[in-house]
Length: 266
Image 1 (tube, helix red, strand yellow):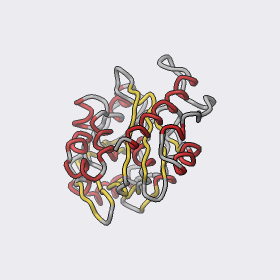
Image 2: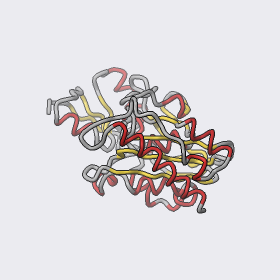
Image 3: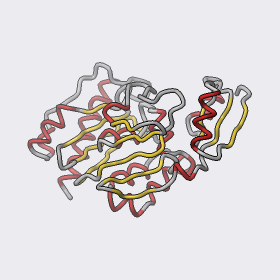
């Protein structure tokens, strides 16, 4: 790990000002990705600005038909929240299966979404529910936020403050987890928003994406048979020693059917 300076922020404005004047500084919330990256010497920030304790990034509330969650909220808190379980049970269930207990007790929703790891779970929920990412500068629709491998619409110095999830009629998340890391080798989030069906896939490709063909079929009839004969192309899927492109493409189909079966059974 390279040397760096540590700064504990007292307010969101202080963080914003500091990042503007120190372009090589990085905000630190849970550190579940940033710290290992630094240990491997793949990142060399000049400063780590600790935002983990900022009250402005905390809180879970329902407001105007949406579930609003502070970006600094830990995965474990999302999983245990009675408010989340009541409003969007699938989101609580997703958070409950992230990584391991250490990751769930330290990692934050905002950090995961900002990092946009191709195998992260939260991006599937954000995109699947058509959430809004609220930063210290603006509001960004989920469909405009994720831009590929570790890439988002966030600009330099821009920080996620909270995320607003429209409460769906029903939703389900199915995941095939890596046995060691708990990351999603493939995960599928299906949501009946009341205005249509959204299907978001994580883990299978270089970034989270919507499966438009499945959305169209399920929009006509929300049933497993609607997607029984659908498949995604293996071209462009992730491939590693844990699974081929074809394997992950098949997982997309299998997990979509499982998620739809969950919804149909409720």
